[in-house]
Length: 298
Ligand code: BG6
Image 1: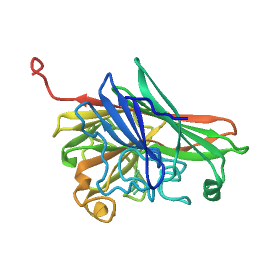
Image 2 (image 1 turned 90 degrees about the vertical axis):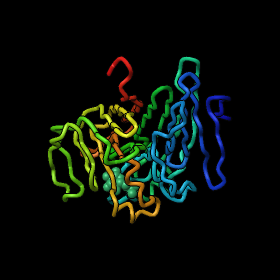
Image 3 (image 1 turned 180 degrees about the vertical axis):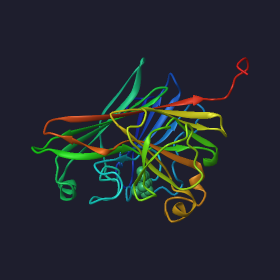
Image 4 (image 1 turned 120 degrees about the vertical axis):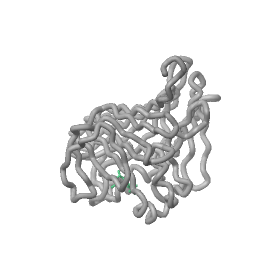
């Protein structure tokens, strides 16, 4: 069974493990690159070819560790805890199970990850995770978790998007004003966002609770922005490691902290509890926005 569709879906088997999948959407000229390892989207390009997602030049793409950049999937644990950091989904090979395209449809693939002997050894719950990536002018990613076991389980999840930006000090994230956040850098203290435009000038690691479902990341250098629209995910994470933390990360270069900001759709503060047979869906949709004034609008 091949999931390749000429002109829309290309699959390149990788020497180490898994495959790379490239999606093209002819009508909008957009493309996406996905590694089956972690079901990680690593590139999202407009017609002009620029990757709107940051992917570290030092990212390990061999399947040995989670990919630094793109959109890693966090499940069933956010951050540190009894499981490996950010859970078990971002560093396992997912299986491609569906591909679709049509003249008036987005180009779409679905990958799945099922519990197995190795996942059950570290997280004793039977689950099915399905991840559908749909590409047209926008990039829509949908994570569906089903409880395939016979007891309830609880989990956290997030889509850990790394947005590519020209200069972190000329980025504004809006509008999180009045939203309560957990400051991971201040002993998990609860604080309230006072700024309608959040700007980053030092290490930042926050979970905004019950955040608005649309968040705009505006890059003043390029005059472009990305609108992130989420549903199913109550929270949003904003993360940038800044100078010292990135210097300690093997898969980032010294200056990389300037080139990305993570704004993540997440279900973090209140884990989801699923009874046997039930499922939960979280969706993130990304859209590029041109913020340059045009002749006639000035
Ligand atoms: C963010 C967390 O989501 O991911 C941060 O809020 C963490 O605390 C960051 O440092 C990166 O995590 P990792 O495991 O990919 O280095």
